[in-house]
Image (cartoon, rainbow, N blue to C red; front, side):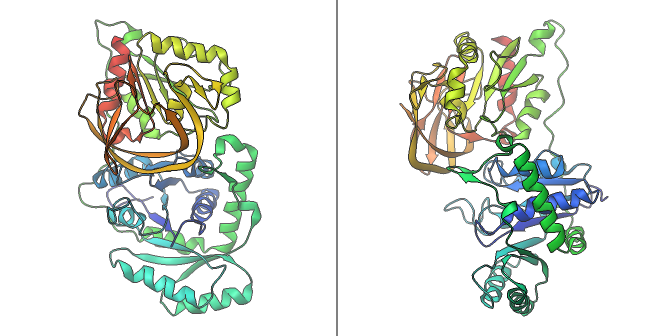
Length: 462
């Protein structure tokens, strides 16, 4: 195993475009290496919550995101080291095409930028299903576009036959880039998708396990694992001064406070309906002194006993609207907690759950707003500033976030909005009422650790 000083062996799995097979190859490689006895650290470029679930299933470790827009380029290395601590190798799955980043921001938040920040070699996954010799021009273009991005090899995906493979290998050889794997079409590795992407692991159970197992077997059989590990070990040292990110030390109990108040219990929604969460959020809450307890709004009929604060992240409440609505006991418990003034942080799916109704079905009724499914996809990074003082942030706090939903909430903002969007369009959004902060905006608290500390302190004092 390599020390953190010289850098964890690491690879970035990228592609010319979305749909090329990055998730299959990255997840399969993680599973194949784990099957060989290596401790594999899984990472995903960008804000995606779903792929890390498959990564976690493949490795037995928490899947973590590396997002240079949400957290800033300066945190990419430290967050990577935090996740990779104690591992033998790290596999980083890219986002979209290799050079695609935040709209209008150049390389910011692209896979290429993260690869450069990590000084990690890139393996390019190419969908070869409709080409032969042209693959050489494609690979040459990606290799030569940015000399600082080191493309160390190619994996050819969806190859039709041995003859097709021969033509592709000959073409790629002419570019001077090694072919590190060839994968045939394999329906058993396909993951079903719907309106916001792949169906999360938490909803698929044994089917997800079978798919990840198949991915691992396909990559192990079709790729040169020894060459891939060798390439990972050739990664350069991380930039000088890089140290693992830390959520901070857990504070000691204040001697004048009761144990209950000094260690407030924060309930975090989980289960199939609420799968979108960054691992660092619960780590920050714990470091700020909270006792973090997970509950499932589909199954649990009331909040955990002694709940002093509530966090409801993203997910798919629209898929489970009937079940969530039928759980009247929990809806009442959530409403009572919110009415008491306790801190409640709700993002996207959490916002929908707090509304009066979702697609005509009763929800918690904390907010005087209704939610419904929409044909329009709202997607993109946002530059935001807190408009109102809340349990999460003081007015004027600037944060970057991400929106990703096919629902509409009416009205879109309360009398005290949560955020003012600075880019790409100027508008206000979300609700701040009593201790509630509810919004469509997904944020990464590692970029502003004071968010978690403020929330936990409000839990102590509310």
